[in-house]
Length: 331
Image 1 (cartoon, rainbow, N blue to C red):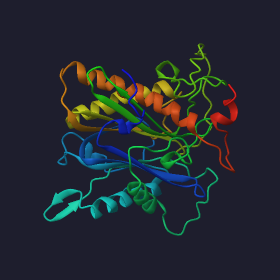
Image 2: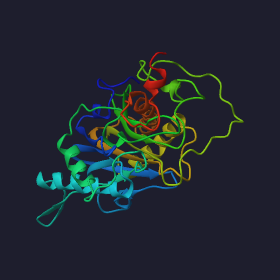
Image 3: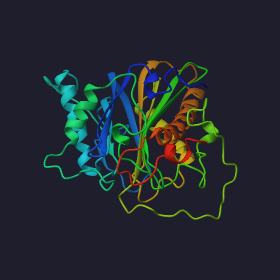
């Protein structure tokens, strides 16, 4: 297993990512869109999720494929970013055909960033426009850190952000992850610069500092955010041919990566969620081993993407918590 050429989820051919952010608002939106509709699944393990159209991703639902997936800030207001993406898809003539009407299918999830110091005194919900701008900006290359859905994100004691990573298996199958990290838990071990995700790091992608080495099993985590203020939302993707049930299993397996990279994860106060996408461009050569390895790669990529999100976050005037770079860029 090795990183793809960009080390981004867009190493899965046919997928594009767009970001839009407003630094005065201290929030933003991110969209994953395919060149054509793709199979999708979802799994929620946090206790406080905020979602749109996730029920239709269940294997027994009618719609087989979706047009895009959205991650957004803004709590419940941010769900309107999906409407902006749907506007862009409709203008492009894309969507689930119902008679002569294309109906874009755009599931999404949100994180809470309403108390991060940004100007939230809007008269009109800004997230629909952010979603449309993100859709229009979608491409194979995109920024990490304080961009898109990660713009106003925070963790236990550092700024969060938007992260991504990819892996190419020996079979040639590609897997990638995209994540907005806004967790109650911490992504670093103790008070030092090392990331919990360090054992899965590839090529110094988040500093190459290695593992902290010592975990204190008696240490109890401190609850630094209030109920409803946190969430890590992610997308994992592959170019393999998967059905909806297999794609859902990929999302379930990817949650292991969240637990490897954030301590604690999946709390009652986080809305932790993972979408999964399968473009179906590459047939599996081994129907037993390949899904097993895809799930493993999805978890590894998500752990790496979470660390990259925090590692790449940049400082902005008025930040209420420091960035990793503020504290440890000299290391």
